[in-house]
Amino acid sequence: MPRPDPHPYDRLTPDAIIAAVESLGRISDRRILALNSYENRVYQVGIEGGSPIIVKFYRPERWTTEAIYEEHGFALELAAAEIPVVPPQVRNGKTLFTYESFRFAIFERRGGRWPELGSRTEREWMGRFLGRMHMVGRRQRFRHRGRISIETLGVDSRNYLLENRWIPPHLESAYDSLTSDLLEHIENAFDDARGAAEIRLHGDCHRGNVLWTDDGPHFVDLDDCLMGPAIQDLWMLIAGNRAEMSEQLAQLLNGYAQFATFDTRELVLVESLRTLRMIHYAAWLARRWTDPAFPQAFPWFQEPRYWETHVLQLREQLAAIAEGPLIL
Image (cartoon, rainbow, N blue to C red; front, side, top):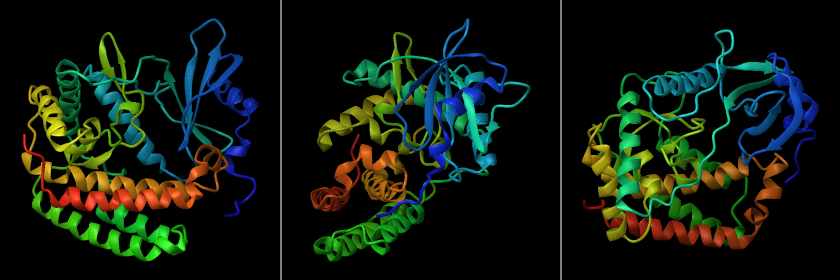
């Protein structure tokens, strides 16, 4: 599919990155390291006489300024409660800055490794971390950020892929029928969980978004924070067959329960949320295809084999949802 030229990020040159940092009074040593980020652009920038900083340039037109400030406010609220997150740095009372139409924020550089979560000890530790985070998340609601929605994640994503002819012709009918059935089952699952509270969440809590040190886990980014059920921040941390996932989730919740109450009605949502993520992820790649970073990073996305596997995985999800909720 053709892309408009130039893309907005084409203007984000090394000189522009350094100029943005130096507009805040920092003097760069001109060392720049691009970090792994596709939705936004994130760089480590060296600072003369000091430690490098992390600079995050927000994708144009993705978030409103008010929504970004809510992300920053949540991070600062968590940090004030001594919950291990990396909040944006505050300069002259501001956390969001602009340079040549790019909105950006700066953060302290903090390291760590992706967690294995292979033991009861690590899972309970992670559960305590999320329980503390959700305890703060329950204090108030987001007003400008999104929420977990079948319409947004499922229906809109499915329709975008079909209407823009991303599904190969030999799979289009199967995808159309299968996703229609899945969305009906997902609606039923959400009906079963009706009454469970919506809280402020991390929103994209998988192992790749958690960093672990000897002091335990921490988050470096809350870019996908939104309103939704607590299980959204738990289900991506479990894997395996049903018995294995039940055991892992029980251990996460052992830690979680030390700080927050988990509503067991949400267990019915695990496979529905997984399915919504799968449908939405495919649509996210399609919607971002005009960004030159995406065809380079995901060349397999346009191959029929990807879509054949995707349809097969969605069929497996239909069976998983039909099995009912995990049993703790």
